View (cartoon, rainbow over the protein chains, first blue to last red):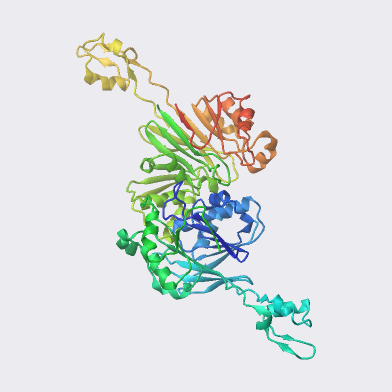
Length: 304
Length: 304
């Protein structure tokens, strides 16, 4: 299992006991990320038994309340729990000011380093990288400056072809490290055995994109081409396509069209307007266009 | 029924699905007040079917997150619901800056007047008054500047003593208004009938005090003397009386001592630390000192 995505909330605008605002917890290639943090996210994290200590990087798509009003509470709670580990927050410019002002006025002295990485560009950027994962922004089209995020595993080491390796007794275990890195084997007599004989291709890197909130915006397609999983907002159905346009949101049909054109493997819908009582209508609208569509709901887990 | 208090949340510090931070909805003499507004308060209001339109005045005790992190979400939701009615917020200086900054950075244009009444005094003040109710601050002893609130019905009109009135045929229905106001009856011939013969005393004005957060602070006693209902924080039990002192909170025993000395009619405990799994322990500690003690819990309603 390379990816595990837990939906903590996937409704738009105003929270209710059955409708939690945007938040997701992503595990990809053994890295953990919190994506958006609407009001009540810390309660949802506890409900789904996600350890607070796993959260070291938080990505905030944009400064609308249903995507970040839960952040100050989470940061404060980390402080109350005597967190020591640093916390990195990737968010549009402005969020730092909001958080720092509240920490100051509440006299909250957190003991852990809190580092803000302000996102300001209108172009896609690499904003996080370590040896396991890369995260890129996906500029979106919304009323407020907004970015989606592309989470991408780094290419893993090549897999050893043990059957073939055994045909060459001169290859020792200490050579495996170089083989996994893709190097050819060179014996002490100068004999060369091609790496492609001794190893197999590693699995393709898993890629997940979170795109919320946005109008129908085909410019994102090249950034999400062929990815494994796309979360694309679907605030409305086609019955309110004009409202979607004026508020810069998408319909379920539009989300499906993006998924189809980008040839992603799976589409996950969310950010439903609470005016719709039956969420299956979103599925009914999207599936004829893009078959492998699923609904998100609080508590849903997707593993790849 | 003159008073109806609904507890929306009564736990300290970090919210969980079974532990909601401070918030109460008070109806007193047909006026409605929201007292404190921890994260998730708007969800709790919906859960207990309290109409948002009833909320016109919000009182915030102090600037610790578990008492106000839900306010920006509620204000934003009012905006989304196209509220037009003005909203008054009584809170320590600083909250206005926090709210205005967030409204600005989220590009939220609310259409209703939002008026802040900043509380800065260390002395008790009358901060709200209309023809039905008065609200006074009760300065508390906490780490951050904090006030409790005393909600006090105004003295009602005198009740007509119809039996006695009927003995005087010269008294007409149009005279009742003056009688209720406490005036003597003067007939056209100049005969005076004392008001006390024609009316009975109105019920004593109901008084409710909310005191959270505070250390044991007997200075509040004169302000809450003989009141009908006291909510007094009891974050800890006596096993952690020293922690209560350093963090400027109270134990259940201390809350009961305040209630006893102030001779209030009923004590309501709350603001429990979530380290205690069994809240009955708070009751066990308080009741030997002050018998008429009750526990608060989310959803509890007290009517007087």
